[in-house]
Structures are given as structure tokens and as C-alpha cells.
Image (cartoon, rainbow, N blue to C red; front, side, top):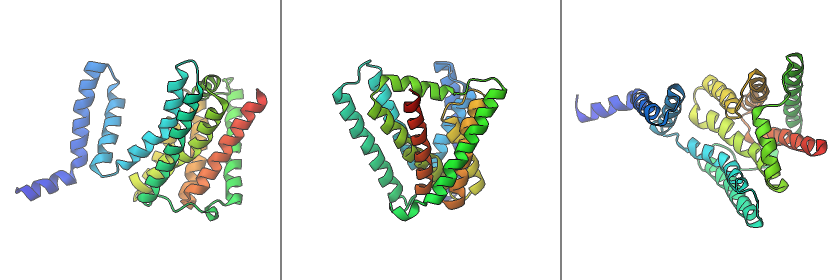
Length: 261
């Protein structure tokens, strides 16, 4: 086997090389940092495969999507959100939105922003579907006598008490843009562009998982919401439509929170 054939062999079975390296690194991490072996292996394998198959730009979008929350949480740890902190947050927030949009445009993941992509009837349908599944999960919580909230929502409620209203609102509404880019567009148009079923399942489960479900109720809450949003994207392949639906739902939740309090 000559040098060229060796390179072709490695390229063909790079997934196996990545998995083998992930196993080794996970084993080391378990012994040193006491990390869970299976979860560490899965994460390292996923990251390695994204690099091996030249799809690491998804990681950049993922990092950017979490940056606003990280910054606000970091400032909140100081127990006092100063005026300078607010300015810094919004500079980073708008930079994150702009850079995410430019990356998506550069790699042809989304079309140029235009009002024609925001179909009001479809947005209303998507919103009503999410509203319907939220009623179903609320009913499930009642009959199973569970608390009608999730650990993720409880954490957000606590964060809301520690950061300014403008920061919390921007973070909540901006999440619709960033999350749709990462969990719908990034999965369908980049990671699994030619595997529609895998894209659907990955987008469905990853979105729910990243919201930290801790029990059956929270899995249903985020899983069914993800099912609606993923189904809408799979059907129409329209980022702006999904963003509009997600934005409306987050705005609705934000408004309810303020009205109740």
C-alpha cells in the first residue's frame, strides 16, 4: 500500500480513527477528571467527526448561540449588574447575532434576509401547534401530579431575578434566532445535509437535550416543542419561518411571565 492509498484508506475510515481516539481520551478523562465515560465518548466523537468531515463551522454557531447566556450569567455572579455590564452585554449580544448571520450566509446555509420568507399564516399555525402541545404537557403534569415547570425554566426564573429586564428579554428573544440557526439550519443544511432522517432525529433530540430535561415532563415539554419546530423546518426549509415561530413563542412566554408577576 503506497502513500496515496494509505491516505485514501484513512479518509475512508476516518470515523473509526475518530472514535478510537475519542475512546482513549474519554478513558483518560475518566481517570483524571472523573467524567462519565459514555457521555464523554459521545461528545468527543461528535466534535471529532465534525472536524474530520469539515463541518466544524457548526461548532462555531453552537458556541455563539451560548455566548449571550454565558456572559449574562458571568456578570450575574458578581451580584450586581452595572451599567457597564449592560453595555458590554449588548455589544456582545448584537455582535453574536450579526456574526452568526454572516457565517450562515457565507456558507449558504440561509438566504438573504427578506420579508417574503416570513409567512404570517404559517407562523400562526406553528405558534398554535406549540401552544397545543404545551396544553397537552400541562394536562400531563396535572394527571401525574408533577410540578408544571422544568428545571431549565426554574433556572431561567432564578437568572431573571439577577439580571436586568432588558438583558433577560434580549437573551430570551435572541435565543429564537440563534437556536434555529444551530439546531435546525446547522443540522439540516450542514451536518446531515444528505441524510434527512438523521437530520430530523438529531435536530429533534439535540434541541430537547440542550434544554436540560430532568424528567419525563420536561422531556415532553421540550421534545414536543422541538417536534413542531423540526417538523416545520423539514417541511418548508425556511429559517426565517422557524425563527418567526420560535420568536413568537418566546415573546408569548416572556409576556406571560411579566403579566403574572
